[in-house]
Image 1 (spheres, rainbow, N blue to C red):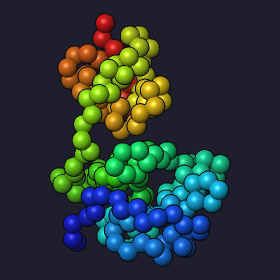
Image 2 (tube, rainbow, N blue to C red; image 1 turned 90 degrees about the vertical axis):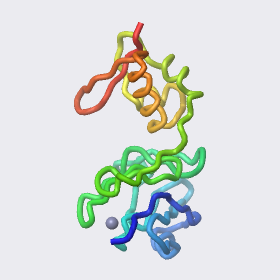
Image 3 (cartoon, rainbow, N blue to C red; image 1 turned 90 degrees about the horizontal axis):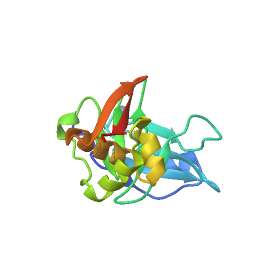
Image 4 (cartoon, protein in one colour; image 1 turned 135 degrees about the horizontal axis):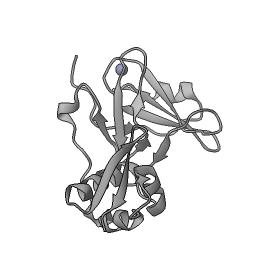
Length: 174
Ligand SMILES: [Zn+2]
């Protein structure tokens, strides 16, 4: 197998899924299906297997991913995990594709932004643990950015983290 895609290339919106699919040419290409509101992201599987992934964005329809277009490109939360077929599992973060299992050796994260450290720290409580989604919502930043910053703050002794129900939570160190 050749190298997988490391970036998402947005090829423009479409009104229907088949239109979106027809506009994809290489692994990592993605098109948003938009009909009065965002419905889904249709993506050529970035591992190059040739399959098309449909990522639901419409919380009225089904389990939906959060999406954001700020910065250098598309961000999706949570990670995208294909349970059948090629089993691709990856994070889409500011246009970057970060592989969660195979291929992860070549991962390249978006640039670190220290400017949100103070905001993340102030969104943390000294007693009540909060997860990265709660912190991100409080300061309107991306969950992936907040999660990375929170872990760096833990590394510097400014915050503490532990796992609750399989997810990480954070408190500010007094
Ligand atoms: Zn695939």
